[in-house]
Length: 415
Image 1: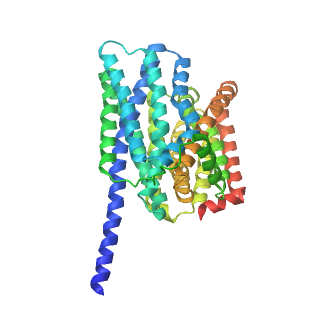
Image 2: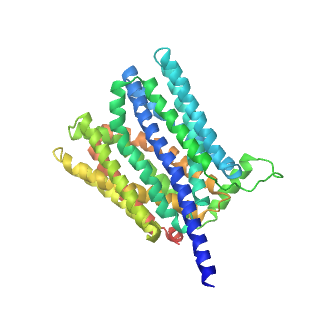
């Protein structure tokens, strides 16, 4: 009997090591790919700025970067739920790296034309519309449900580490190498991410050979299935409202640093790195204690912390730059406790058959809400002053936190 128990325990330990090994192999590749993509993204922004000296060109590039994800996200979940997620991720990544190859070849023959960069940004956004929800929907097939929140923290850790390192590396590389050479990094990162995905066995969805693909019908079925899960509709509403504030405030960080606090480009970079350091800290904290936390309390607390930081920033004097830096760290801590926990709620609550549709829809809603927030921030920050907009956004964010606590249906999300 003792031998049987020891054999059973050994099997359980092997299973535990196996799924953990799968998770960290995949996310090591994702971390490297995230680092190289962040470096390339910053280099492209600087290239567009140097070539055009136009805010309109940067705005257009930003639009191209999110518009396909916003529109396609409403329907792409059907393909993610129906087909092999591993293949979707590999094909998407290879197609995006192929776009970089085209830009590299163009750069070798002369300067990269702006129209080619814009087309590349648009098509990369299409690739990301397939890639990101597929990656998020893959995690529950590897990680046990009771560990999803904890490992959402570890996943955020890889991304946060890449975000911290990328600005400094991008600045050094951009001063030494042409854009075409820096783009090679993204190709290397994509290849490494593809290799880590290829060597890991990921469960495939059950084939539906007798059922013909009907995108609109299956999209509607997915939305109906999501709506029937208690609290999901309310979580989508909170996500859309929060996206309208969170993303525009992020774009205004350099502006408030350099205009209101009279900082330099270097100081703006420091603020971004401190915020990312806070995100890394929050990710590690979530990784350590994620399975023990009350999920909706964590989400509400994250919104509250971000709202307080934003509101207090709006009340600071122009001489209080160091206080703003400290606040940025704590605002960064809130990020994984909102986005990481929110993702784990979807992964736990939504049937795997509809998970791709749920995650791509949430991404789509965020992408649609973001430009609305950007329009509002552009109107009011320019008229009232960027610090006043931070104050108003902070108050509005605290209102979202109160609304989150006031919705009884959201309590189901913690169970």
